[in-house]
Image 1: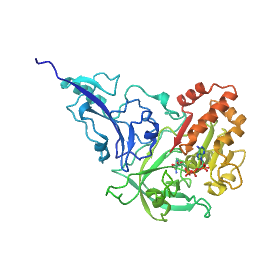
Image 2: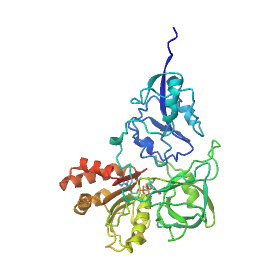
Image 3: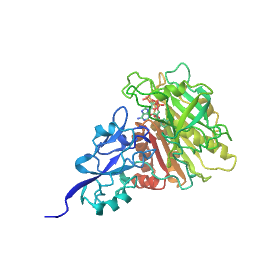
Length: 427
Ligand code: NAP
């Protein structure tokens, strides 16, 4: 008669709207299509998510790694989540699922027993089952990477930076309007490493009256500043004039940034990113593959190595860089001025009039022998940044080259991930 009432408790996966920078990585990564978004928030469908964790390591901010224990019948719907400005607090009267090995849902007695477990298991702790086989790049940094600072500044407490430079990088005759923007933090600490990103909070509000969420940009300058010894960073920003479907649109933050004048002040959050970092041992090799503005972190790493070369870095640098045309390739001039014995640069242009379409993958195939040499070397670290679409093609060509040169790609791929030597950042 007085037996405990048994209720189903769900450890519900949620995304923190205050930290999320809406980069779409989680939605792209989710193998079961549990993540979706509207114009405001990214949300998780409680009835679809199986807590496989595949989306957690690639998230650049950690916004994805949030969990609340709820009664299964009262799970937050996606419509509720679309309306959130912040996450709800954990209801302390709902206990943790008893059987944690099946995180999606389980049965527990509603009552005091479950509360203690809940207290230690909510808020950001990793659920069992890493889903690592679903993650294509490393989730750990190179062993010799410097330790990054992350999230020193948040949506609730951003810092400011002053624009000290804003230059168009691409030929004025081209459609691609890409800018090199230098931001100075004055006396505010903003330590960044090559490969990290920062968030910019554009001013104003969206049509529905909400403040704009932050947009994320990779830092294009080395850790000691765009100008060595200065507290500044540079960004590579392309003015967005079309949405993903090709329809005309004005990107809120990219247009704001590209139109900034010297002396303007911007709100900044971050830094973000703790795995897409460069190795610091001097004999480490960098194999860098990028398209368009995905060149930002490669510029940062290359420039750091150029400055450090004078202090004894001996590893090789090999770069594959794709753009529509030479005139649309950011940093073309400075890149071409780098000594050939410092960096092995390979360009691929897809829309040069009268020439066949050429992607970075094609250039890699042409240089297969040298790429294979690097793949064989345990000091090689690979970085891929740019368009989402290039990821498949680049991984495929790496696999082809490895196999053709006597390396079992599946085993090598796993090793590269485990050792923090294959980093992917594509949007
Ligand atoms: P884009 O000009 O549209 O494209 C650059 C080149 O990539 C073009 O030659 C394009 O060829 C080619 N390409 C298209 N699909 C490809 C594929 N499947 N494999 C290989 N190459 C392919 O590039 P973008 O507008 O600069 O975009 C760069 C991307 O980097 C964006 O998605 C951006 O979000 C991302 N990103 C930017 C930053 C940053 O800090 N700004 C950082 C990280 C990532 P086609 O002629 O076929 O178009």
